[in-house]
Image 1 (cartoon, protein in one colour):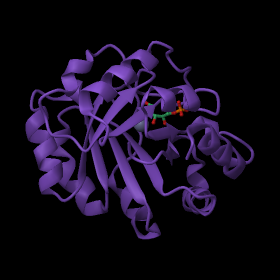
Image 2: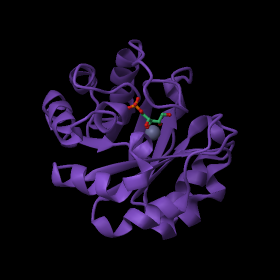
Image 3: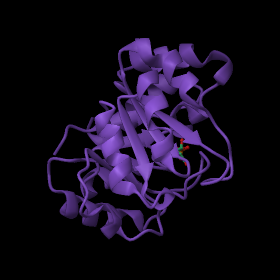
Image 4: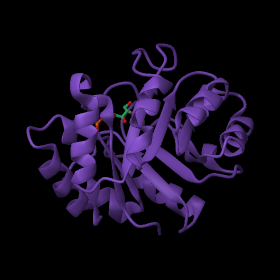
Length: 214
Ligand code: DX5
Ligand code: ZN
């Protein structure tokens, strides 16, 4: 299995001092930064676009872009040229999943496919993936509670994708939920409010990393 890593989500960061917050968490050990993109359609809120990826592109970390947008294939080129390392699209957001993933690869990025809590895990079958993202809350907002039934889904996805692929979990991940997710087969752990929502993000990062075995 890939070595466990934590991906702090900047959705919960203080945008007035975004770069400083990211530098602080990178200094604490983070090598992946998760960027949540929302379009006001696939999920109700609007969040951020490729400009934010560009602004962080020189930091030398993996920029993990999570597209919660309809027809994500139309956005791939802009995020790739902004400096995304991995681009994840939602299975529910396009009738052209295979095409979208191919577009991500053709743009030189790792290709991820995400499934919502209500989507059958079989949606991850039959396409070439670098990363499977199992949503452990319904997408759209930080700070929600982890859905316990996710653990069984993580186990089934790990069986489906095999031991070598990245399995990312996103939503409600903290020092108490990261351990059970790791046991179930997760290797990449997104955490937003449990890191940037805390007074000491570096200490919070360290606690989640320890729980995940990272
Ligand atoms: C939710 C986003 C998450 C969000 C997680 O739709 O995809 O990445 O930042 O936030 P927490 O860790 O607070 O649940
Ligand atoms: Zn996310």
